[in-house]
Image 1: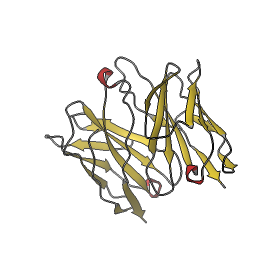
Image 2: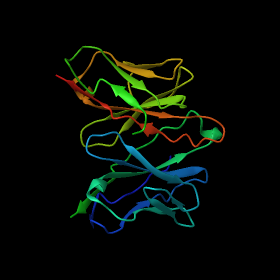
Image 3: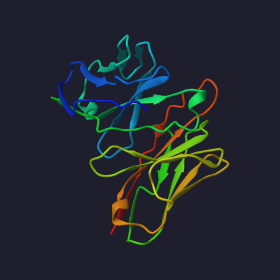
Image 4: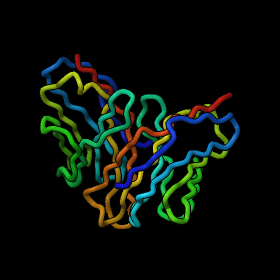
Length: 115
Length: 115
């Protein structure tokens, strides 16, 4: 699986959009970008994933650059409950990847929402 | 809430003992993965079970073993506990199948302390 690079920490004011960057310059054509977050000592929470196109769900938006070498997770209106460690993970998917679905977590970005 | 449950929530054992951790997967999911998260680090993949067989393993010794049952629930067993086994143990379930992106959803974890 491709390696990802994230800033170790970021701050964001409550109510503003939080933009979390991730570099994955060695990503392969069949690899997806996944985002999870982990709030203090809880299990990681799935946020969103994408392959090529931008994606949006009720939690966040994922913007993937055209060359797929980087992506940005956007939390549109950050609240104090969004304070967490955010992990960007690249992982192959589909039938060809059966038996290799492990998630490789890095150190993530510690996002702090400031009141 | 992901529908993935783990028991017990917390556990204290002494060095050399054996421990069994349990996980119930989300309804409709057929694959279970286990991760170990030491304090201050990201989760590390232990192994994955599909159709009651181990199907992918991380860099963990054989004293870490598991089972998956016909109802897709799973157990993680650790023999000869060492102090370094103290960690949060996470279970994640997913659905492997045609058309599935096999996104993993995590349970709340079991905190194991080895004295």
